[in-house]
Image 1 (spheres, rainbow, N blue to C red):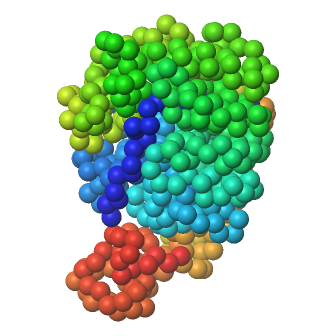
Image 2 (tube, rainbow, N blue to C red):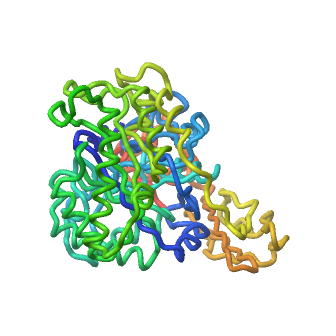
Image 3 (cartoon, rainbow, N blue to C red):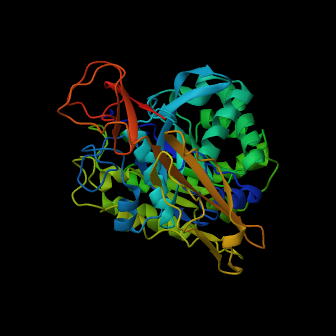
Length: 497
């Protein structure tokens, strides 16, 4: 099913990113797979990084650039990475669906409840697989919460425990080492953000996940509203790493005579640097030098065409921003969006594929090397077996480590497979080396009842009929013919385990 494009982050002037760091979790997050089966987050992101936004809610139809086989789907991050050499991304946006259940906020990508864990939606599954494929080639992504449209978590609830538990589920589920809080518009209420900051601090203490805070800013710097937001997070002991400004939708009234959007973005970087120093001194009792303040800054532009009120942001302006970012040794560059620049989303301001990515990809530094590498598990694959068949979880599975050699006999398997009962079972394989680094990989074992008929598009099915399609069992909810199981969320078939 095609989802509507999520309302973009754009047209809130500039955006500031603030990242929180804790070494203790980085190792943990980088060596443990999450329950959502989206791969493993990277232990060490580069000190300086280019991480463009990718709208994961946008329905991509360009051949080769989407996940799945439905004629469209979530953006293929591995494909984008392979073609640009960009390894790190900000994925937009997870939002509240407007209610709280069992002490946690109900959520979905773009605010769509179907795009969340447990709904078996093809686009949502594609988002997770896209992240997993990116991580498999050495890349990673931060997930962004909030955005210009929709409802942010901290707007739905100011209960610190509710916020904390919601974030914790997603961070652990996707094995994230970095998230982003995109605080715009009505989501900038200081009191709501104080509650959110307290939850984020708990999340940081528990998991160590790096957190990016996004707030609007003018070319002349942050307004009092954004200063209040920095107060909310700094005063609640959230450790800030980056402050990135998104150079978007300034409006002619904010520009100096003869100034273009590229030059205005440079002015915004320098203005924000001074305010960072003041905020740290006032709210965190910390003195920063100019170079330290610059190192906490990133710059995000809105490439191509944004609106009739704004000029097309050209590659020449992107070059100005990147050159200044290099000269000041800022922490991060970004742009909205890679969807535009890759031309998987139509935009009249983009004349050739990756015209901005070629410029921004030159910014950044290598990831910090680890003293010790985690072991590698090989041979773990998803399998399909019949009821009554023999299943040996360690058959063909090996583990090795660069420092310790063969660790196959140290693999620990968790998760039971009942070969007497049809269903889908998760099996986890974990191995640790002599330095304590662990690796976990997962597989899905599908036990099939061979007596169940295979789905045929020419046959009539009535409510209660059970069929097998692509190794998955489905039950008809009503009379149907020719409607493929799993093709739509609201179709005549429901998946059964």
